[in-house]
Each structure stands twice: as structure tokens, then as C-alpha cells.
Amino acid sequence: MLAERIYEMSWRENKSNNLQGIQLFRNYQKEAGNNQLYQQLAFDEFLLKATQDAGKETGSAFEDSPLRFTVLNKMLPVDFSEKDILDIPLSRKIITNGTGYPECGVEVSKEYAFDHFKVYHSQTEKLTYIPEIRFNKKDIAVTIAGFTIDGETTEEAF
Amino acid sequence: MKKLGKFVHYDWLEKPHVYYISGDGDALALTFKNGMAVLYEYWFYC
Image (tube, rainbow over all chains, first blue to last red; front, top):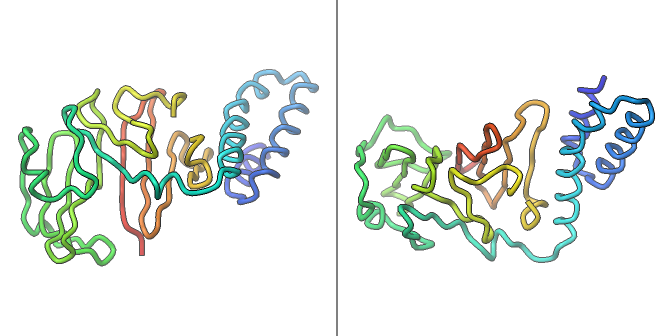
């Protein structure tokens, strides 16, 4: 029953109701003496409150602040190209025309596979992007809306 | 989370510690393990 309740709250769009629901549920658990469950749900309440508070903000931080990548302490240009990737002083494996996997209609002409991340380049779309990073300390970082995430970023800080 | 909260989705039951941020025709996912960031994934969706 609890699992169903949390699941229901997790997908509902109306986050103000979600927050109210989990606060009521936590208070009930506290009054019932179930302190362990009361503490376990604290993070859920925090998440819902944070997302609700952010929703009140106007504008779009995501659009105003596009993704930026930093490799070995050097930030790539916003619209980095294949040349910028080739300039990265790390060993890589180049897979040309790979296995023909289209990315939802975007043909991937080349894959540059580094130890901890890979880069897709589409010749037809003139598009170069990073589909995957396995964070390793501070080797590579991604900055989202001014917040930088690398292998030493904690979930709590995020 | 404070800046992008309205774009962030998560399913705490099915995939705890994974956060999805939706863009315009694209999306990314951030995965944390043992409290630390471990994986970034980005893709276009149809």
C-alpha cells in the first residue's frame, strides 16, 4: 500500500498535491510512532518541495543556460564540433559508421569512444553531441543551468 | 534541482536516484550511486 502511494505521488503532475499528501502521510506516521518510515520519507518530501519551489520561477534556466562540457578542466564551446572533440588530448577509439544505429532519425556517422564518455557525430545533421558520460572524478564535467556535475558531485548537492 | 525543478522528473520507486531533465525534443538522465554522480545519458526522443 505504501509503495502504491509513493508511486502514485511520483508520477502525478500536480506537485502541490503531492507535497501536501506526503506531508500528511509523514505526519500520520510520526503520530503513529513509526519514526523510521517518517525519516525515510524526508527525502521524498524535500524533492517534491524543491521541484514545486522551482516551478514558481519564471523563465527557463535550461534554455538560457545550455549544457556545457568541461574535459580536463577545459570547457568545450557551446556548439562544439568534431574538431573540438579531436583536439581533446585523451586516447580514443573511433568507430566509423558504427552499427548503423540511428538516434531517433539522427544518423550517427562516427562514434568517438573515450574511456569515460563517448561522442556521437552525425555528418548528415552536422551534429556532434555527447550521449553518455561515466563520471570519473573531475576528468569530465557537465554544467547544467550553472550547476556543474562531475564524479565528485553528491546527490545531496544536486 | 532548485533551478530546473520544473523540468526534472523522477520515479523514486522504479528508478531511485535517477533524475530526468526534458528539453525540446531531447532529454538527459543523471544517475547517482552511493550518493555520488556516476552516469550522464543524453538522447533525442521521437
